[in-house]
Each structure stands twice: as structure tokens, then as C-alpha cells.
Amino acid sequence: MPYTSINPATGELLATYDDISDELLEAKLAAAQRAFETDWRRRPVNDRARIVSRAAALLREKAVEYAGYLTLEMGKRSAEALREVESTASILDYYAKHAQAYLQPRPLAEAPGAAVHIEPIGVLLGIEPWNLPYYQIARVAGPQLMVGNVLLLKHAENVPQSALAFARLFEEAGAPEGVYTNLFISIEQAGRVIEDPRVQGVTLTGSERAGAAVAERAGRNLKKVVLELGGSDPFIVLEDAPLDWAIQSAVAGRMFNAGQLCVSSKRIIVVGKARGDAFLDGFATRMAALEAGDPTDPATAVAPVSSERALNLLLEQIDRATSHGARVVCGGKRVERPGFYLQPTILTDITPQNPVFTEELFGPVAAFHVVDDEAAAIALANGTPYGLGASVFTADTERGERVAAQIDSGMVFVNQPFGTSAELPFGGVKRSGFGRELSQLGFDEFVNKKLIKVAPVGVGPFGPARAA
Image (cartoon, rainbow, N blue to C red):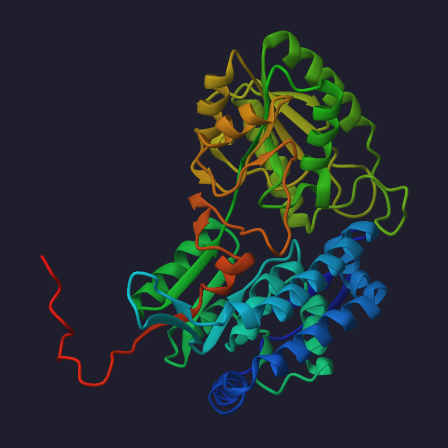
């Protein structure tokens, strides 16, 4: 399957790129292994930091150019594209700044002379999605290149120009050949890369199906895997939360990036029937008022979804939901204009028997629920196979923390729909995956935590006997 660049705002085919040959793939694998063994792992961390920092600086210098690829290939609004460029640069800068400290030996307080040393493990394969083409790569490349690992990157088939742009970034920043390598490869070729003995670990952000397939293949070859998969994040509004503020946050949490985030606010859960009615009225009014348009136009509020396939899947989910009793409060249809636009949509009256009750809605579609009390809100929030993020809105932040502690997810945000920055660990539980990206936790995912224990000269073979 070729890598194909299509403008989601118009449906225009922009460019296609064929998969590379097996011979070229072998050459790239060999170059990555050579770069790791003979160069990158041996460089002083300050040398690696200089290159990664330069990549961040280039992103900022060429922000408009790099943002343009995001808008062109996946339909991101220009302001959001520029925000992604800055977020990406910030992640690269964060690891360039903090790697020296993270790589320091970690003494074990209860074991004199013992310390854990942090070392790279080798060539990694990253498989990344289309919804945040640069940011998703940076969450892997930033920490892992600074550790001293090298990265092979298979990007989504619909963002090839963005993938090539990110590869040029490291080339221009001075990274040696093989340190960061973009791969236009098929699924079958990717499977062989996972199995290749030179590859030591795999990280994937994507669907459950892709995650399960990658984890199975990596597991058969005894390789470490980090998976960041889907989410159906609850947005809980407790009875004391200021209503207008919560509604505004719900719109932002559902509509950012055209609703195409794994950590978007997908299920709105309001405590109390009267407040639920008032919330739904205000929420629907604001969602219906959002107008679709050219993503390069600052006035545009609704951007296209990434592809016709994504649009059709959402329309199928809406139809399936309504055929099982759900009600469309607003939206629910394709926008009558060129491109892949869906009206901002709210579904309610979704019972546990409705298939959409447990599905992820990856686009501008919100599921709306009203419950009687806090306990019911928590039960509904946890009634999903996913466990990525969640949010709780309340005037009492201590109460918000107590509720957050009862939600089964990798992240909970009190009084914000979601959030991400380099210093905050990102990841989920249940069918949302395992492992963490960002912060020091992400730095530590693909390393050898080597114990070095130093004993005094002349000590016995197993040390002095310990008193009973």
C-alpha cells in the first residue's frame, strides 16, 4: 500500500510514495545498527543534546513551513498546527536539558556501594499515527535519542510529507546517518523489522488491533513494547461545578484537533437531572454554532477529519448508535462542502446495550450521559474497556482529587479536559495500553537499568554475614 498524501479539506490527491525495497530496508537497518554501535551510544550526552536542541530550534525557525504540512495532510487548523510544532520543540528541548541528570547513576540507599546505571539498549522501531504527526514522534525521539538509542520510524500512510519533513529536521540538525531513519514500509515489512535481532524494542501509538498485533510479534521475539492505544475518556461534571465554565471546557475537550485525540473528552457525564438538562442545552447550542471551513482560515472552528475512511466510520457509528436507541441532539451528518467534514455531533440516551457505549468515537462526536450522583458518575466513567485519561470538574478541588483517585485510568485532570507537556507522564491502563511516554518515566522505558555493586577489597565471596 503506497503512502498517500490527500488534502482532507478538499479531497485532492497531493502525492504518493511507494514502499521501499527490501534491499533498501536492509541497508537502513544496517546503518542504524552501525550508528548505534560505533557512534551514537558512545557520544558524550552534551553532543547528543546539541543535535536534539538544534532540531528544536529549526522547528521554531521554520514553524510556518512545518505547520503547513500538518494542515495540508491531516486537515489541522493552522493555529493548532503551530501549537503542535511548539509542543514538539518543547519536548525535544526538555530531554536535551534533562538527559544529563536522568543518566546519572542512581545509588541504592539501603545497599552501600550499589547503584543502578542507565544505558541505551540499541535500535528501536517506532510506529506512529497521523493525528499528531510531529508530537507523537517527539515523545519517542526526544527521550530515546538522548538516552543513546537510535530510532527507525514507520509513520502513518496518510502523512508522508510530514514524515519526510521530520526526518529532514534531524538531518539538518546534524544527526549522523542511522540515528533517526524514516521508513516507508508495508505492514509485512514492519513485522520483519520487529523480528530482526538488531531491533531491541518497539513503541506504537495506534489502534487496539495494531497494538495487539505488534505486541504479539514482539513478545514472540522477547522484545520490550510500549503501547499507547485508544481512549474513551470521561468528562465528569459534579453538581458544584460552575456550569458555563464546564460547558466551555467540554467543547474544547471534545473539539480540539477535530476530536481526533486518544485523550479527547469523549463521554460527558453530568451529575443531576436538572443540571444535565441545562448542560446539554448549553453544550448543544455551542457545538451547533461551530462552523466548518478552510483550516487555514483563522475564523474556521471545525476542521475536516483526516480521511474519507475516518468520516465514513464516524457516520457508521452514528447510524449504529441511533439504530440501537440513541438520540442525535445536534449534528450527525456530513457537512455539504468539499473535503471530509462532519457536523459537531452529540449523542445521548446511549444504553449499555448500545454498541457505541463501549466504542471510541474518534472525531467530533460526544456521548452525553446524566447520572444521579457521584458514585454513579464514577461507575459510568469506569464502565469502559479503555483507561487512558479522564477529567473531573468541581468547585471543590479536594473532592476532585478524591474522585480522581477512584477512576481507572492512567491520567486524570481535575478542572481541565486534558493536558500534556514534557514533564507529565502520558499513558494508560486496561485496553489503552501500557508503558509511559514523556517525563523521566518515558526516558526510562527503553534502557538497561544495570546494577553495579562495588565491594571493598578483601571482602568475603558473598560479603559479611548479616546479624540475625
